[in-house]
Length: 171
Image (tube, rainbow, N blue to C red; front, side):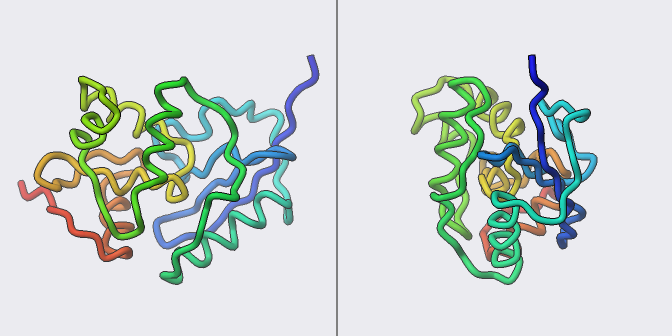
């Protein structure tokens, strides 16, 4: 079987270096360096670091706009069809949460008619497209800041950047 080839670019962002990985057709992921599930499902032997790439160049222009505070339509970005059917349902739902808005795990569970907010949390945590599929916009009950694969301080930064309403967890 022929090994799948991936192109990778590193993107210096305000929340750390992002690893962007695509093949000729699809974006496979945007991960914050060293986050949980980093480059999950990607055969790292098949990765080549590139300076330009048709899919990744579009992603970089989106990220530049995002970090400049401009909202863009992402519907044309080709996301790889990876994940379980359940994960794909959750990730599609995440894409509908507008910039600067938040939802709770419980609200998503209710909307998708899933009994467990924890199951939603698991799927949200395995989202391979940080920032682009805005898992950072999902909060715990009472708009509390909860888990983020790259660390809650990065989630807080993204939410503050978007002007979203959330509660810091005070110990």
